[in-house]
Amino acid sequence: MIFSRLRHAPLSVRPARAPLLAATILAATLSCHQGARAADELSMAVGKPLQQAQTALAARDYTKAMAGVNAADAVAKKTDYESYTIAQMRAAVAAQSGDTASAIKAYDVLIASPRTPAANKPQMLQAEISMAYSAKNYPQVVTLAQQYLKKYPDTTGNVGTTLVQAYYLQNDYANAAKAQQAQIDAEAKAGKKPTENQLQFLATCYTRLKDSSNETHAFVQLVQYYPKPEYWANLIHGLMVNPKIPPQLQFDIERIRLATGVLRNPSDYMDMTERAVQAGLPQLALKLMNQGYANGALGHDAGADREARLHAMVIQRANADHAKLDANAEAAKKDPGAGPLLTAGYDMVLNGQVDEGLALMREGMTRHPLHPEIAQLDYGLAQMDGGRTADAIKTLQAVTGDNGPRDIAAMWALLLQHPPAAH
Image (tube, rainbow, N blue to C red; front, side, top):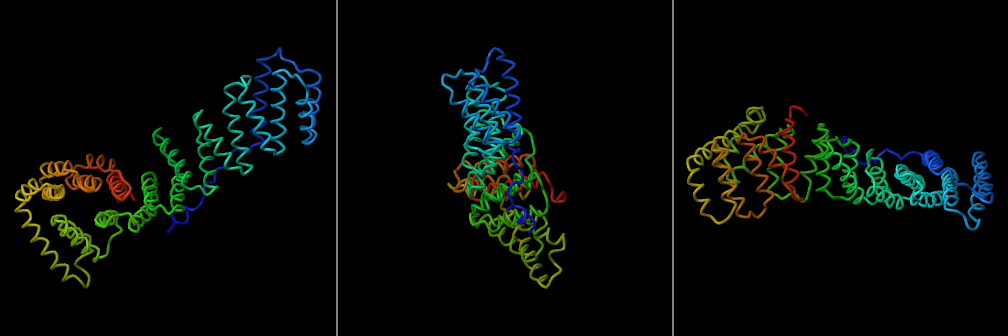
């Protein structure tokens, strides 16, 4: 499948080049600093070795440049201004020479100093993150990125992306997925569309974790924003092989396959029809068989006679059921359990008594059904089958849990907003 090839590649975004970013920020900081503190001066003992360090740095003689910085730092009784300037030069030399550890220590001094303009501090922290990433010190990237995200808004998303990558490259797929989902949620909340790459990456993390439930949920989000046929196919396949999906939800998955045009085999229609009858919903069974005849899946194969016999039986069962709708509803009200009310209510909706049926289902949901998420899913589907599309979407989007109903509900909500013809 196409998506199976896409979803195992890590993000391709890379942080900015660390030495260039560091030098640019230091230059801006030094310029602002000199303008604000014109009265500060360097003593000869400090200024001379720093001048030598600057000359050596321009010539890319990093050993000599760092020797000059160390000589200046060794001077006793330095002023605050001198210590600050030494830290600036140390950061510049270390960053350009690739000494990440020394550069980050120097940047920490600069970030902590009140002499550094507030506007430059987040840029400096970004430079630290970039340098640590370039040095493949991923644990330090995580620490620094978390510090940044606690203090500053990630307006470009670069820090969040780097954090996700750092987790992933340490094989910490759980935290990579958590960070990626947080970034996706933040963008969605801000009215932005998450990138296809972010969503693919989220699915990749859960694939690595062998977390089929959350992997399916990642596919749901992919289909939500990028409803490509291959994503729909992968999503449905994920639901079908998900061991956490209860057996009673397999019928709902088959209905999704039917709605998306994936289901075409006559035996699938027959199986769905029998499941609907067993569930006490012969009217739904009749609807499915009629749909199979309408689209040519039934009535034209070697099993046409058997299909016709089942069709006749379903019609008879649906008519008999219709005649006792009210009696079934009254019996369900007297039963202490939630199941009979939910089934009788759904059956009434399918038979055209939408308001009465939905009211009966709501009463059933107040009786604490064994699986409340499945009950809410069924209620949303009843609203859908009763023509209450807008209400159905709201109900389906509100389904929670991690054992299948959430993702099946989310898929139906997507289908109602993006009909199959759009795919």
